Amino acid sequence: MASTPFWGFQPMPAIAIPWDPDLFQIGAFRFTWHSLFSVLGILAGMWISRRLGRRTTISDDQVITLALWAVGGGIVAARFLFVIDNLDLFSSDWSRVFAVNDGGITVWGAPLGGGLALALAAWWMKLDVRSGLDIGAPGLILGMGIGRIGDLINGEHHALATELPWAVYYTHANAIGQTTPVHPATTYEMLGDFAIFGIAMWLASRYIGRLYIFWTVLAGYGAMRLGLQFLRIDQPEHLWGLQQSQIIGVLVLLAFAAWVVDKLRIRMTTPAEPPQRVATKRTGR
Image 1 (cartoon, rainbow, N blue to C red):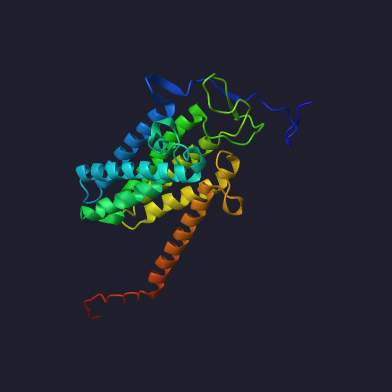
Image 2: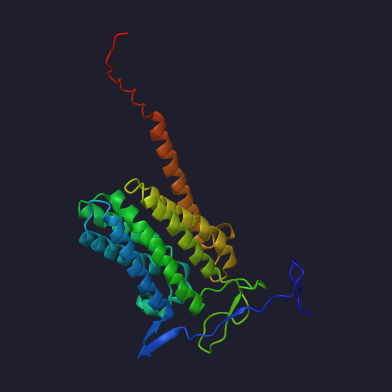
């Protein structure tokens, strides 16, 4: 007899995902839904960062250059983190490390590797690094959210089973997703990415150049991944039973806390400027 959820109703039908994860294939080259939405996410992120750059002294061309460095650094770091977490998949053939199109990246590489590459490029170009990071962060989280649409379609990130009405399962013969109803964990992350993007854009209307935007995006994503990763079952567990993405999230949150403490220390130790006296004109009675 089927189990009854705690709210007392029989489970509703889950959502079937019927699509082939591959859009097309030419020889050994496969172009997937994930690839399509990754490209769309990169383009959307670059467009947003270019618009924000116009509120600074960074030109459109310089924003594009910074974005290209961020994309390159993000891809390299994302692949590196995946390889480190799955060494057994590559130990018999290390040339597979470079077969990125076959899949296998860790999304944390985008903010970490992309942010580092952007900061180094901004420093090399003699631009304000803080402004560069602040205009890049909203585009980054928007692009990551759009990219997660491709993850929903291809289903490569496996999650825990659930009877919730928005559970998903995969029906195509080539699908790599689960065939029984599971949490759409990457869709939860997509919605979280878009929420963080909204907060980042609100901050961008006021605080570009102070790193508030960059740290809000990084810490927000870290906290979200720390929680949502408990629904995922596609990564090996490490320290304290945490997965790699959760460990990185904890480290990012600790770095964020240190940054906040440092900002508070500076504010508390900086003497306040005395109020300026305003000259007044005496009038007789």
